Image (tube, rainbow, N blue to C red; front, side, top):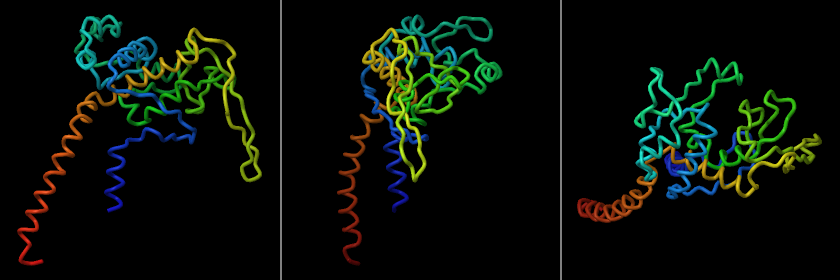
Length: 250
């Protein structure tokens, strides 16, 4: 029974608040029903993520359908490439990128992952924290590191928006061993956005990625409570029927 309960919990509450590095995660202000937020996130994704990261399990016209945009709007906002034949990418095409794995390994030391399902595997809180906790680190090839993803290979592509931060460390005692931990950040160079504006930008971007990972989740949630009501009513009739069948035995 405990095993089934655990499976049910994991199915209902996917891994949205667990960090593999043990870092505290900030709660992402996600609203999957906010189509305007998803549209803004799609624009941010196209401008800053889509040149390297593919979303190969999604099609452009699906985004148009789900967000209420026209295909022309999606084309203008998100399609800047041509396919392998040199033809302009169609709105019905999958969201792939031209970057090859070999080029990515030479440029970044590792293949650039597809991020269609990242919000499912990592969780919205992790993404929200990750995109807001880059800091200067002269020991890294890109000159940047990340609190949620130590020694990350990805450069801080949003630095012009957020600015450049340096970590503020505190020393803690762990069984007689002094360990430094990042407590906060200080601004070395201001970005084009205020901290509040940048947090809102990241929230929209993460909201889009949550949608990207499961486009039908609004329908699933809306249908879920109806199924639960049906099962509750059906349980009453099933229980009464069971009592009728077994009345001579019990």
